[in-house]
Image (cartoon, rainbow, N blue to C red; front, side, top):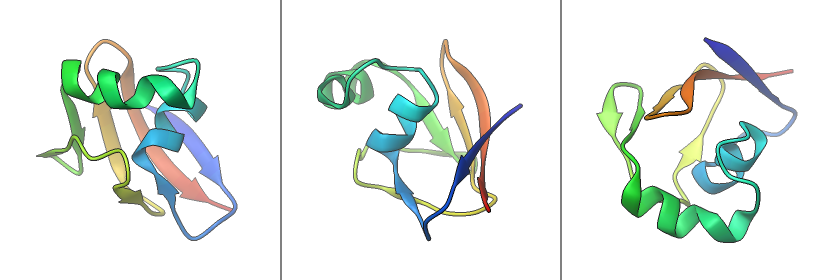
Length: 71
């Protein structure tokens, strides 16, 4: 499981996908979310504005498993 570090209270799923190198630009987020299965804390999620906070776990089909860590 890879750790994605943030220094804010939250990060949106769209921003997260870019930080995690699942997509190369923010503009790809909408279509990526429509085509790819993503789970946040074990629940299916497809809203790019979903707020991810410290200790959230994210699984992205074909990209890997991640945990958000606030520092």
